[in-house]
Structures are given as C-alpha cells and as structure tokens.
Image 1 (cartoon, rainbow, N blue to C red):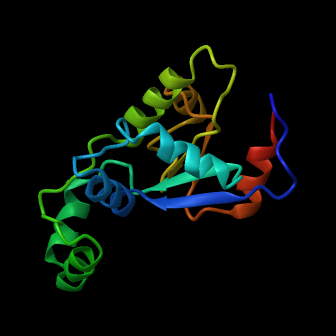
Image 2: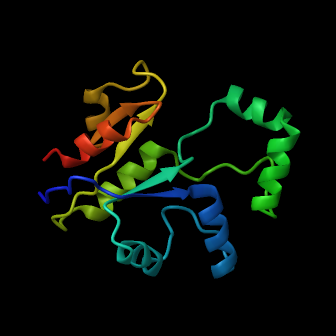
Length: 154
C-alpha cells in the first residue's frame, strides 16, 4: 500500500452542488454512480491525496424537517441550486457509495481511503465500518490531526 505524506491534502466536494453542476453540464441526471470517468480523471489530476464528499449521508427525518422549516437555508439552496426542490435527495448514501467505490476498485490493486465521519460512535463501530468497506471512521467534530494520522496508517 502507498504511504501517505506527512501532511495529506484533502479535496472537499459539496456533493449536491457538484452533481447539480454535472447534471447541467451533461444535460442529464448525474449521481455518484454515473459521474463520467473524465470528471474523476480531472479531479485525480489535481493531485489531492483524498476526497471528502460532503453531504452524501442519508439525512434523518428530523434533520430534513428542520431544514424545510428554515426559510434562509431554503433560499441558500435555491440560490446555489436553481432547480432545487424540497423532494431532492441524494441517490446514494455513504454506505452505498463506499460499496460502489470498492466494486469499481476490485482487481485494480488500488484502495481509496474512505472514512465515515459520524456524530456518534453509537452509530458506527470500527468493526462495522470495516464491514461496510470503510478504511475507518472518525467522530465529529473532525480533528485534522487525527485525519492526518489515519491517512498515514498502512
């Protein structure tokens, strides 16, 4: 396995916004499973050590309810995503995305580090994270020193 630099660089993608931009660019609905290969190649060409897909986790009913009652947040969504609708939800959650990435990597000799970032260790244990294909998991708030250490582990 490749060793990580002492100070890895993480590229954060606001998943909803990025998928919306790609859908407009390609004039069809794009989800994480259908992102064109050239888009992945472009991101890889930037030279980052890891990607963080912000917002791919399934939202809780309570979180959705709070968001739908927040007029300022809804205005921000509509400003960033002109075709935003309150029924918009990601096509994949983090578990499904991890499974898909592991499937795509099969036989390539490459293993992308994927860490679940959760607010509660009640939601996910190290064993359960590994069973889902994650490299590991971390608790919020994200500690960049812990992330660096985890990315440096073999």
